[in-house]
Amino acid sequence: MADVDDRVTAAVLIIGDEILSGRTQDTNLRDIARYLGVLGVDLAEARTVPDVQDEIVEALNALRSRYDYVITTGGIGPTHDDITADAVAAAFGLELYEHPEILALMEARWGVELNAARRRMTRVPVGADLVKNPVQGPPGFTIGNVFVLAGVPAIMRGMLEDVGPRLRGGRPTIARTVRVEQSGEGTIAAPLEAVAKAHPQMSLGSYPFFGPDGFGSNLVLRGRDAEEVAATVAELIAALREAGVTHIVEIDPAA
Image (tube, rainbow, N blue to C red; front, side):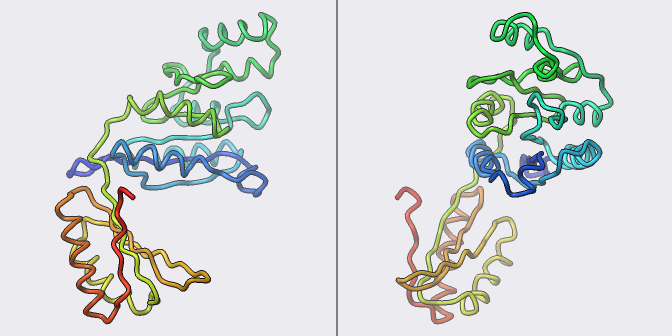
C-alpha cells in the first residue's frame, strides 16, 4: 500500500495467451504507465499471465494486497477464453451476475435476443461498479482496488479516462535527462552509482544508445522534489566531469 511519504502505487496485470505467444504486441503497459505518471501514481510492477483462472487469481491477489491499485487488461470479451471476470470474482470470493445496465446497452445495440457469447460480457462480480467505455462494446468494471479494462488498446485508453478521476493521486514525478556522448557505461558507472547512493529517494537509470553518429547513454533522473532533482542533475554533471567525461548535454524537458 502507499508508503509513509504518501507514495501512491499501482500494478498492471496483462491477461492473455496471445501476449505471451508473441502473436499480439502489448502497448497497453506503456500507455497506462504514462497516464498514471501524470497523476502522480507510480507503476511499480507489471505481470503477464495466460488465460488460466488459477494463475490470474494468484497474481491478482498478490498484486492487490501489495499496491494501492491494480489495473487488468484483456479477457473480458465474448469467447470461452475470456475469463477475467470469472477470475476476479473468484479472487474476491464473489458471485457473478448479469448487470442490468450492461444488458440494456447490449440489447439496444443487438436486440433483446442476446446470444450466450454476448451475455458473457454482461457479467460482473456482485458489488462491482462499472467503468465507462466511450469507444465501443460493454463497459469494464471495478471492485475493491482493482480496475478491469479491455485489452484492445483504443478501448482500454478510453476506459482509462474514467479510471483516472477515481484514483488518489500523488505528487507527479519529475524527470530530467543528462545525455553523455562518446563515453561507455564502464566510464560513467562509478559516478552514477555514487550520486544514486547519495540520493536514495530518487531513481537514476542509464539507457545506452548506439548509432552511426556515435555512442553513449541517456542518464535519466526521476524524483518528486523539483529542487532535489535540479541539485542532483548538477551533482551528476560535476561527478561525470571529474571522471573525465567531456561530452555532456542536459536535455531540456520542455524541448
